[in-house]
Amino acid sequence: MTAGGGSGEIEAAVAGVFREEWGRIVATLIGLTGDWDLAEECAQDAFARALQRWPHDGVPRNPGAWLTVTARNRAVDLLRRQAAGAAKLREAALLEAASGRGSGAGTADGHGDGEDEEGREADAGVPDDRLRLMFTCCHPALAFEARVALTLRTLAGLTTAEIARAFLVSEETMSKRLTRAKNKIRNAGVPYRMPPAHLLPERTASVLGVLYLLFNEGYAAGSGTDLLRRDLTAEAVRLARLLARLMPDEPEAGGLLALMLLHDARRTARLDAAGEPVPLEEQDRTRWDAAAIAEGVRVLEDALLRRRPGPYQVQAAIAACHATATTAAETDWAQIAALYGVLSRLVPSAVVGLNRAVAVGMAEGPAAGLALVERLEAAGELGGYHLLPATRADLLRRLGRADEAAAAYRAAIGLAPTDAERRYLARRLAEVAGPRAP
Amino acid sequence: MRYMLLVCGDLPAYEAMQADGSFLPDCRAWADEMRRRGALVETGGLRPPDDATTVRVRGGEVLLTDGPFAETKEVVAGFSLIECADLDEALEAAARHPVARHGTIEVRPLLPA
Image 1 (cartoon, rainbow over the protein chains, first blue to last red):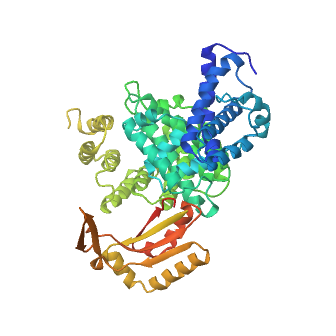
Image 2 (cartoon, chains in turn cyan, brown; image 1 turned 180 degrees about the vertical axis):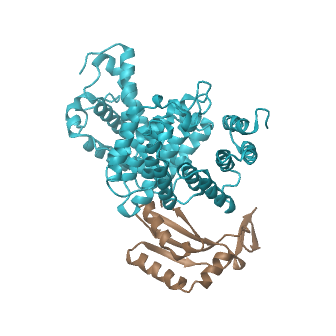
Image 3 (cartoon, helix red, strand yellow; image 1 turned 90 degrees about the vertical axis):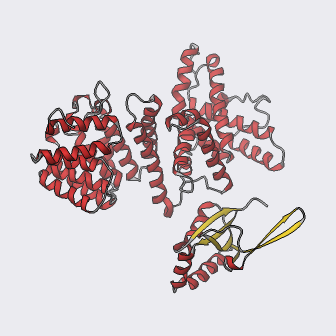
């Protein structure tokens, strides 16, 4: 027990453990009570109680255990209070047995003495239910957007209002989405567990997909957008780190974490002072986060040692090729082209094919890249996707076919979804067509 | 928990089932397997909506309509009431059902009795 500090210090201490402990507490309480709303309410209550008690009693040695026990005692009290029937009483009794708290140990107003349990609890170790929670939140019987919202609410501890803001919907809409998902889990009998072995590959893909979406939502948000939206990236990395730790035998979990770390390492160099995107080859590589790159490469190497490659590991390997090149000219494009070849066999997609064309264009020359682009065009793929004419334009420009390049840049500008991309393409167009175009 | 598997399909799905030689034996094998596990409460196929009569009572008067309640392309063609530990078990049972290859199976949990 440390000496009680000022209220600012205590608030900082509570905020510090919140991100780490919220998901663990909610996961434990759902495991004990099966009641998602009760779990959230009790977790909230435990943090509120910490703000009340820690200024007087000091911050406990093991804040997580203190919070978990306090939340659990609160759940016992709530279940007792609403114990209308024998079933609820039984539940409360079972919970008491699980918490090791004798009857009458807590006072009637719910001031269960978390700290008294703390020593015992800290070493006994509360089982980590977060993996069960993660898999249940990402159950494929739930709509994808519900999986995302539920993961942020129950594992990351974002409020409904925060999640609503991050996904640009009203709080009411988000609240309904969360309530509906929790109701379905309860009413349809979605099991709260790690899926059995035969379901694991498909379910793991769903969890990885949710975390990758969170990362991309945050990563795609520009500097002018809501800070909260960018925070999604940090939440995604945190959750991916947790997943990789809890599933050490799943190389794709490591692959996803590595992919996120390697992309996130380039975050500050991606936009210039005016908030305009800076293409990879023009980025100031001294601004890349060397520690994040080193960690990403290490995590990726560990994953690859398992010799079960998957799309996230391959994408991370591509990101590592870029991240470890000291200059753009030193980029190992032949390796990247080969990796895109592997990726297109794992997940056949026209977008992967386009990226492969870019890499081949760098490794073997613009004519080889253009041949692949033309094959995609002939297949009628990616119609309406601005990066198809943009890629074509870059390859034509490098071949010295300025007029055709200009026409392709104009086509790309017409399809580009954001102002920033239109401005970037217009600059490129000016290089081949002169400053007065278009 | 009990789940109702509502076996649905449209006309092309129905025709595909007719053309699928192993369809009926597979349906029987599915039901036998579910029975063997003690998971099958009841199962049955329905005659087509052409044979349906819709009943309403309004102001004490019984109103009968020839045909289904709603004209839709997808119709309920059969059902299986199953008993499972959880949704995962029910979804796996539905995925093994031969109808799932052609039509669709809606998995609906029953209200507690």
